[in-house]
Image (cartoon, rainbow, N blue to C red; front, side):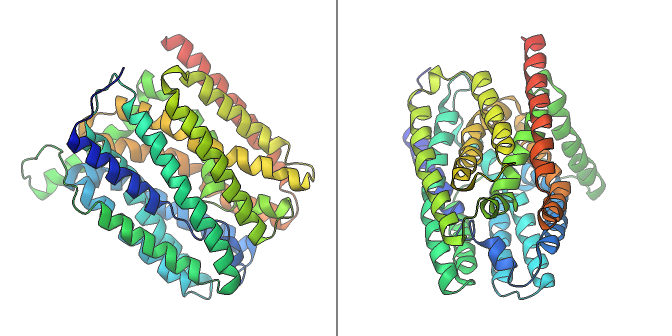
Length: 398
């Protein structure tokens, strides 16, 4: 179904694309673990990541409820400022404690952003729900994000060889720029009556509960295992230490790792262009299942020493994350209650991040002891089970 886009919507779309560009310029993407290794061990990295991500996870759902109640734009801006500040702290940290504090602040900031920015743009654009305009925009946004990631990853990999602190400083600056881009977007959520403090607290926690309840519906429940296994794997790769651990496993140095990720970005941009062009013809169930199977197989083939061919594994995990996102974003936004949309998106992020709290120390310890194959063999089992659940529940529901 084709929808006529207004001038106002077009302007917001342009802001969204620029926002995606700057908020995804991860200069530290391919080099952060090497920076950490200047000061701490892989086991300490796993512990640091697990605790810091747990703190971010605790903030995840409440931040969505805060965004729904007090303004998605305000919470998103605050989150971006927190994220940028956390990166600055890490840039000048030289031991476990400042790295931990900076990472924790950054994760709290990203938790604030994750439920608020998407809900803000979705509500402001107010597309016809029967169209796939949102999925198409998110796909284009993913392309812009990849362009930003591509440029920043390559530059960050090179700058790391000059001064390991520079990528962190630049990454912090890009988050501040992203905050400025959405500064003028005002919330269109309904104005709520002023309540007493006790009633405010009560409605706040009711909103959190309602966000979780959204996933008990037949429309969203079948996606939960996919989020917990496939999206969680992508999260451990994109945000966690798994990608660099795998790059090490395949014998890529920091610069070659940055080149591999950059190449993955270029190819993924092309795939997303095709998705945007033929979005009406793409079957959701087939696409999600293929992405999940590809993710599982990529881990299994990583068990032996495949050397340079490991670049294909990095690509499967890198591209899979970005191809899966538009489908899940469309489903969650279309089925979420408007009053608690940011909370619902935050709950989805909660499910995605939750496994990494255990996976971070596990992957760090297994890698330190040269037994990463245990994870590479076990996690695909969970993925295949989630695919079966997705199809069985979908069949019953349909």
